[in-house]
Length: 203
Image (cartoon, rainbow, N blue to C red):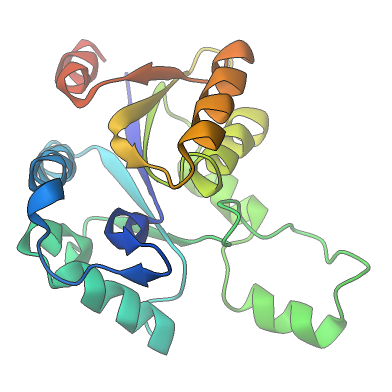
């Protein structure tokens, strides 16, 4: 059975209000170490690991994003060439294949040159038996990414998991409501990082 890991907007791990933590943060060291172990372990096992970027690597914003993360040695994995990068919108989903009427043509051309289109996203992430999601924010783009994947890419037999202690949120109440709705919809199973290795081995 084939598994995949989806790291949605990892910059959110460094969120500090409207700013970002640069460098290691003692408060989150244990979490960040578990993230490092998950990603590097998965890559070493040949598990497809998708890095949902907010901006292209070659853009100024993308460079800043990588610099903030790379300032923490526990996030050195972001430059691993085995990662599969996807440039996903701030909403946590790919760009539609067709231009919405409200979007001007010149804007659409620019957006299409930046973000991963829906058809390319599905081609990249499809064909797995298990999908594990981490990142942020749980009440926003991470939830959107999981719902989109469930609706557009998930195979009928595929299991979806959200690794709860490797996911972040800003508004605790909104995150709680979002988790309740996702569970009610049967979209994903929420698991802890300590359970993942056995799930991957079972796969």
